[in-house]
Length: 295
Image (cartoon, rainbow, N blue to C red):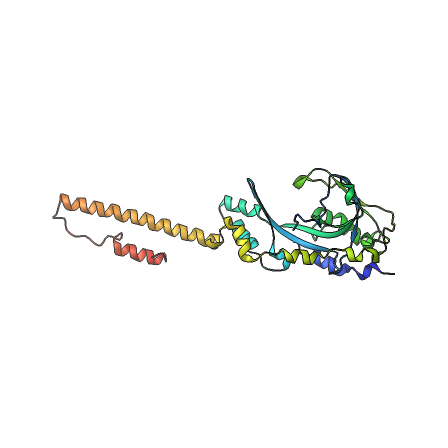
C-alpha cells in the first residue's frame, strides 16, 4: 500500500508557483489535447515531488519561419533571449518594443497523465503520455487555475494525482492554437481506482531527462535568434553611438561647406584680412570627435 502524499510536496509545489511565471515540443511522448471533451488522470513523477516541470519557451513566427526554443530559465540558467528582449522592450523605438513582445517567453506546465478517454483518437486511451498545460488550466502565483485550485482544496487535494483512488480531470477544449477555450474544464467528483500505482510506476516518463537532452547552448540560441542583434550591445548604447555618428557626419558637412566658401572668397578678394580661427576647422573637428569618443 502506498501513500500518494509521499510522492508529492504541497510546500514545494506552492513555492514553485510563487514568483514564476518554463516548452512544449513535438515528441511521441506528448499527447496533444484534441478539441472536444477528453478525460485524464494526472500522475505524480518519480524524479521530483513536484508533479510537473515548469517549462519556458521562446517562440517566433514570420512567414514560413516558426521558431520554438527552450528558454534557458527552464534549466535555471541565464537566457540570452530574455536579456536581449528586455533591452528591446525598454527601447524608445516602437518596432524594437514590438519585436521584444514577439519573443517573450511562454510558460507551460508538463505533466504525466493517464489517458482515460481521448475525444478524437481512442487509440490513445489507456496510455501514459506527457501533456502541456498553460497558466489558465494549471494556475500560478497570479492566477487560480483548475488544477492548482483543486489541489489546494479540502475536497480534492492530492487525490487528483492518485491512480488508485483519485479524481479524473475532464478537459473541455474548443478551438485550436492560441484561440483555444477550456471553459468548463473540471474534476469529476467521484473517486475511483484505475490501477495500483505499482502497475504504472515504471511507465512514468522522466520529464527532466527529456528536457535536458534537448537543451541548447547560448551560442546556438543566439544563432537561431540572430535577428535580435546580440552583437549590437544594449539598445541605449547603440542609439547613443548612432546619434554621435550623426553629429560627426553633420559637422563634416559644415566643414566642407566652409572650406568651399573660403576658397570662393580667396578667388574674389585676396586682400581680405585673416580672422580668428573658425571653430569648424579640421583641428576643431578633431577636438569634437575626441569629445564624442568617435575619433
